[in-house]
Length: 190
Image (cartoon, rainbow, N blue to C red; front, side, top):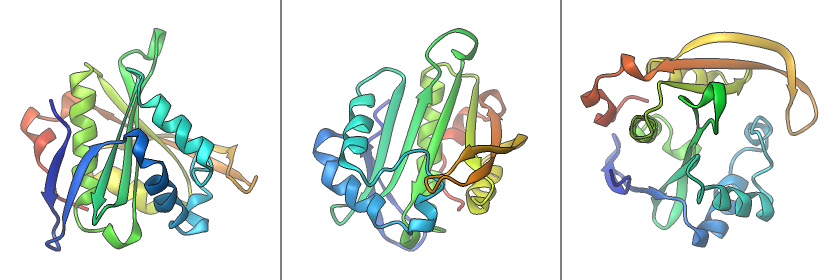
């Protein structure tokens, strides 16, 4: 299924969702650099570094990772990824990651992008989607709960954020079989 599409948000703005491409380096850097430093602190990697963005684009060429971006007025306003476990025990398990620019939150964009990532997971015959986040990311947990995820466990002081401070890691999970085929395509919510 082609993941490229335009959607109209709750507030009437239109965004174009498409795969991340090599020409997106500058736009990705601008997007991630524009996030509040406190928010960036909880991301897995320092995505304000050009080499990290280049690595993310290279990863997109693999069959295990698919990245989507939402573009409005030629600027990236959201970034989402599907990351499939490569082999062994986790081959039917994937992770999704999602971040939306503050000005586009509560517009339905996060939910629409998450639903497209669900479709990608379904295409890859994934049975379960996991999301991992740090305890301070309460808004993200709320969004994923609305999408059918449930908290599985918390590992206290398990990871260090980008400032080097220990944080609790929370794993949430959603069984893809719990979602009806038509539900994957709908898009509204956050």
